[in-house]
Image (cartoon, rainbow, N blue to C red; front, side):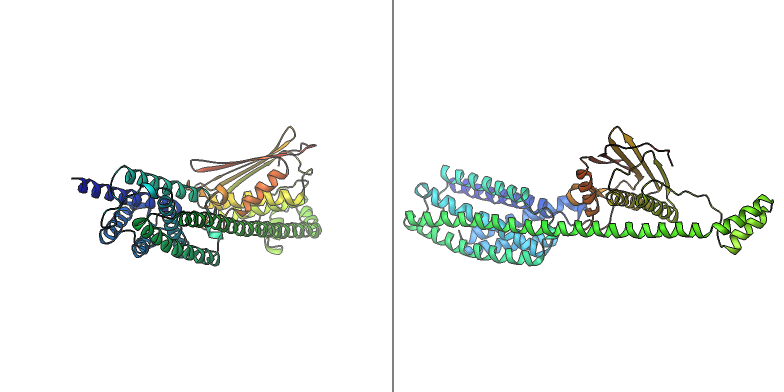
Length: 443
């Protein structure tokens, strides 16, 4: 009877280990197929449970069985979950290191209370139950720490970094497996000597230090690349703004050069020759009569950005409305231009994917704060991009750096940034602290 209870308990422990590992890998990597989550969970838990139970049936505490279960995890997450191969190798190895580390610690600390049967199996009883509970709880908590301190943007960690990490993981894992085998044999035959316990605990501490250093190095590299991409996005936007300014200046020059032509048209209109004036515009100057919707503020760069966006909306069939109620000369030209360019470009891209297709911009004063209000239509499927910023872009890995620059500008002026999705409309509100704002007529 006791043997049956012992076998049922071991199977239950294997099932719990499968559940702990499955939830960790799924939360870290994500499903390949969102439609079959239940099936994915069932396959992963069931397959790992079967693999571990089969290994335990054939042999006990074998390093070869450990590598077999590692291979099982790797095959499962490669087929069923997202992520790069190098990243999956890292996670499987790390997970196994945690299990080995916990086993080494428990054998070292509880050696005097552990007893074994003639086959080398740990005798079932209160000590066995307590050790299994401690082991599974420790495994769960360690994996939670990995999830909490995971690399924020794994796409920024290169395969070269993961290759280096996997080399360290593999070397650590092999040494730990052999150490665990030695500790088990020593404990089974004689009980562990104090020197062996000290060595085991020291190796565990070294493993923890190596892991922390690797994670810090990887995150530092990712942060450096992230800053470089933010800088590249800012410089790219500055280039766009300068091009828009040049276009705006060329437009002003053309308008100036057309003065004589306009005087000629004015003369025709005064004399009542309206049809002749229209023909002159369309045939001689190749200009189609249309309603002007240009914006003119005291900031040339801002004029360039807004007017460029107006033309872009016109070309894409998007209705755009803008209301400028105050001057913005107390803010650095390039900061305001980059901020508006990012906000409006994102709004236009989202509106283009929607049915209604509209963009609304309002810049106003609220005491000593400049308030920028942007709203646009969208398809209602706004997802999280970099650092929690929301995006409708198709490439989620490289979106968000423009808005990170927006946030930097907002911080520079002691302001506040807020973006919310309301059904099929996305609304952005920004407040910037700018003393000495002046009111001007709405455009």
